[in-house]
Figure 1 (spheres, rainbow, N blue to C red):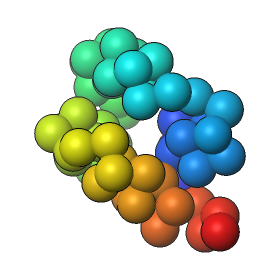
Figure 2 (cartoon, rainbow, N blue to C red):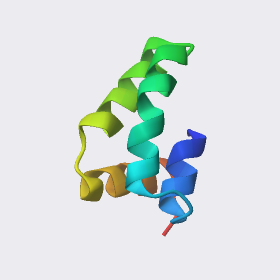
Figure 3 (cartoon, rainbow, N blue to C red):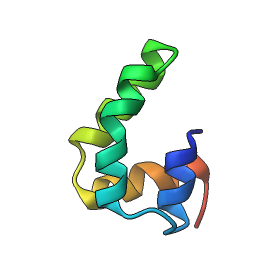
Figure 4 (cartoon, helix red, strand yellow):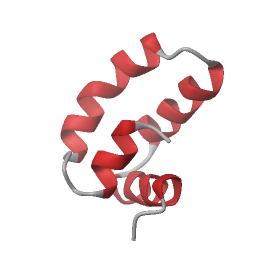
Length: 60
């Protein structure tokens, strides 16, 4: 689970803030799995990003 997903799921990070941070997260990701996760978030709509974050974190 990534910190960005936690922050999105808890509404402590806006989608705009997340989108600004994603390129750097992709560049510095330690594994291909992390990079792919961040790329999925980058390509997702706001609604899809929230769904991914909720699913990853289990926050309701």
